[in-house]
Image 1 (cartoon, rainbow, N blue to C red):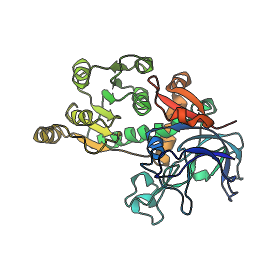
Image 2: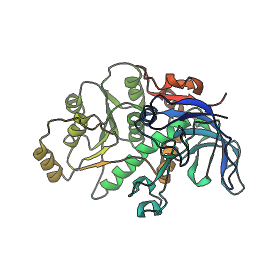
Image 3: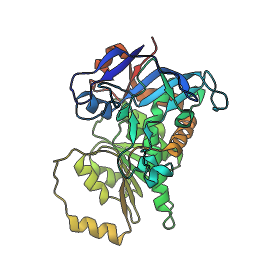
Length: 351
């Protein structure tokens, strides 16, 4: 069968190859692959900067933002043929550390976790794949065209879940949220903010194209004139979800909130970028206003469930507009080249 594979550490090694049919495994689901999303991590792996092949192999099947339809399901699994499913990405480490032992493998302490399509486990960019029922998430059938958005949605579902946990240190009734970045993560973070009834503001650098309209159609407010202008127009946010990793925005967000503000950093910054920082002023604001800044990455099963619930409640037409291009897997190179109007690009797997 066909699969999109790469030789990790070797730039330019991505290709569609023939791989063995997935081996039958007791208790596993057999799934027909429908599509996978393409994100920055996939591009890093394709560039040779990241990724690990399974033990004993020299190639890795790509694809962690999955979507498939169950072909075979064992009795008692909770799944049936025809169910729309997404496979969880991360698996707990074999030790396991305390967090992994408690099902919180997104918080792995020793780094020995594995990840499908990324680290030591083949991914989902193949015509068929298998997955343990305990690491599969059933989706609303209405999401058949957009279910590959679940994995990025889990990232922001976790972010919001942690914001709310932190907020419960004291009375917490947020009103205004600022999302920096209007890529898939930022737009999905805005969606979950709107679903919470908050006054959502989204900051990005482009003034036209699909992003401003997508934000406005959520009932949120779009800004493109920089952080200071956005703050003057919107007022101090109670919550910031930072989804760019752009160093000046990261630093600016730390001092942008109202008292008792919470900043969640989801964007990954490049090393070596320096900015001027009044460290004393930032520290003073954080301490005197009881502010919190924290980082968040990956997701566990609870966050997949939260993400699936959020997508099921969303306007499917709006979700479909997040998908800018649907590229057949044979033309994968087109999907790895960014286009000006792109929001989310996916690879279709079915022939």
